Amino acid sequence: MATQDDSRQLQACLPGLRRYARALAGALHADDLVQDTVERAWRKLDQRQRGGEMRPWLFSIMHNLHVDQLRRPGLALQELDDDALLPAPERTPGQSIAIGEMDAALARLPLGQREVILLVALEQMPYEQVAATLDIPVGTVMSRLSRGRERLRELLDGRPVGNHGAPTLKVVK
Image 1 (spheres, rainbow, N blue to C red):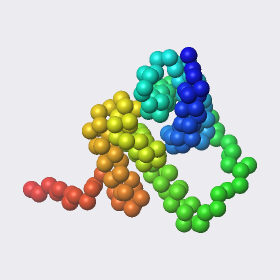
Image 2 (image 1 turned 120 degrees about the vertical axis):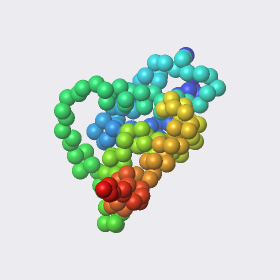
Image 3 (image 1 turned 90 degrees about the vertical axis):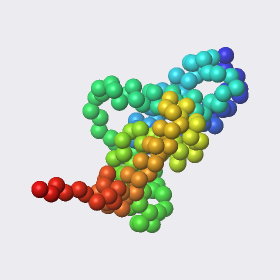
Image 4 (image 1 turned 45 degrees about the horizontal axis):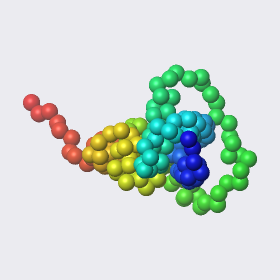
């Protein structure tokens, strides 16, 4: 049975869920992912461990829903420009380019690396919560974070991805 405290905790997590959903699924599907997450969490509230934090539990539900959606074939949808209705935030041209480049670079990361980077950097979750959310060991979180950060640097610096500055080997006969 849901309590007022459960409701307050869930509402406090909504901004973070929205950010993570937008980064994972894009603007077109983010609201649906958040809604599905909240709906499932509310139905399964009695299954949540009392005394455990709600935030990693909610992010874990969102992660699982997102993975399920990726596995399920879907309809081809065309994204509508919802942002045209809202005033654009004030940014300098350099900021707009940097944000666009970062967004494009994040999209090129493998899903596992992107999820870890978003949870650690954007949501500021401790490694232990990220591991619980994604149901992976803490060492895997640290490895994916390290590899993801390096790959982001390569993408943003325009370096070839995966080279890591190591000299290439040549076959000599």
